[in-house]
Image 1 (cartoon, rainbow, N blue to C red):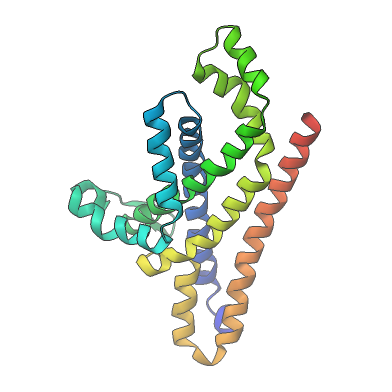
Image 2 (cartoon, rainbow, N blue to C red):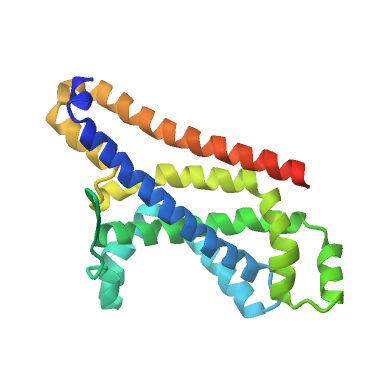
Length: 230
């Protein structure tokens, strides 16, 4: 355990990158996933078909391939997608092209699962409520934003929480593509202190468990609050 204790600054900084990846990708995937869910149940056939294809394709593609696509293929199709224009420095944290590519990859991948989780919540809303909203003159956007989606989010808290917990663990894939998050730092420390490999693995596993448990606590509180509010 001395290997971790002697490098606590690197340990916490690595998990700082992990949390940053989770927060930015989590918010982005929720926004994009909500739009996808609205398109998926919307009245425009082309959007329903396109969204269905997107969700099916992304959900069945390994996350590593999505990362590879945005790290190597996307810049060849359009220059700005190399994200070299991004250079943000906050304290000791550097958010550069590797971080941006990881956020885009995680967001696009997770949004497909958010879409399906939220769609299950939309299906749980009584059809009569949507019809009543349309009867008083609300357009589709108004029906979704004021009637359907608020109830769908309440019904979808458990599956959405599971999706976001999976996202926390999926941030580890960013280690392969140049982001110095927890898994990347664990590998680096392990290379320097191979005799303490087990202790290092346990220390980093505990870090992930703590993050997941903190998020699960707030998700459970939110679910409990919304259950009472129904």
